[in-house]
Length: 417
Image 1 (cartoon, helix red, strand yellow):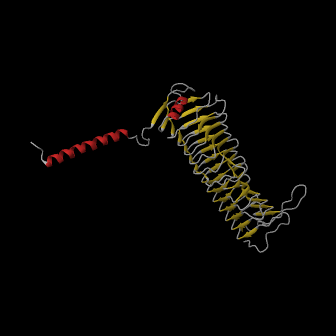
Image 2: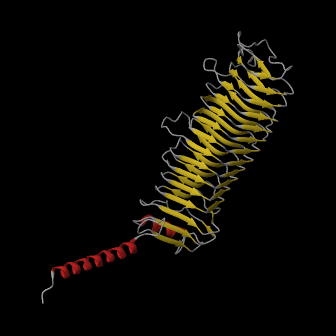
Image 3: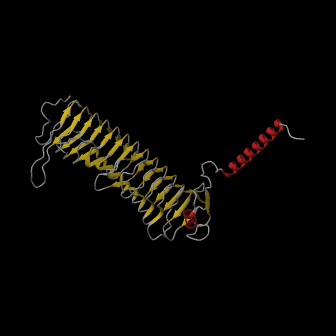
């Protein structure tokens, strides 16, 4: 008996529903787990040896040859290296993840070179502890890199960042007792160093030095880090860098040393230390604002042979001195605006062979002079460099001398409260 038209339509609908359900099951079976790319591959490291089955070396070779994103899972507490590892590179990306308690990579037997060579984009490393390398812990020469909850200790350089290594994040790591913690070669775009711990570096925790200003644009963001017992916390020269909300404690020479162009230090706390807080030397258009200094043996901020630098709304208390301006550019003077200096052990503001703009500053209860203005006389003779700061609206303690030594005088017509 032929089917009615209604029955035929019902059968067709039923068949189509079956096809859609089948497609749904197939799609779910092909989907990756959350946070993992489709068809991602996982490789376990189960051997602590330098080479052989289950070793980190074999895992890197497999990851490099893979056509999908790869996760290298470190399942051993310690790996001892005797020779250089192959570079980390995969077009789809590689994740190196240590087990819950972390994995130590001991490089004390490695004769030289980097422990990890990140030469491909989209690489992330988590929970790894790199110790005792004669040269570099991680060399980074590709974009889109992330390092988190790792540590690099007792190496020459913790992380060496090449010029092309843009879009990098170093977060919640520990760098200790290296010669240099993190070294930058340029003003890497979208580079961030956030919430890391630095301690006891022989030269500097962060080192970013170029011979000429970097004109590529972008600035390295250094924020919310903690520096402890560094020779120099942050040293930058001609590399654009924004340093915000960092804590720098017990620095031996300077918490920050800023040279050349492109430096901004804002909202940092600099405490204790045998020498300087922030030193700007041969600086151009640096900005130092809203920082707090306490317990510094020498100057909170010192400018030497610098121009167009702004020192604004900083608070310096219980330190040796407040601010110093030495041999600045007369044609492009630097400025100190609305800074507060409380109970310096010696002078509040020293001006030596310079003519800065001093406006709206307060020096309270200095043990010596609120402001000392001195001409600079080169050793062995030569032309004297006069000091003639522009003073306006400053509030110095009653009875504190504002000009001393030499015959330097403030510019005529200035207002001094």
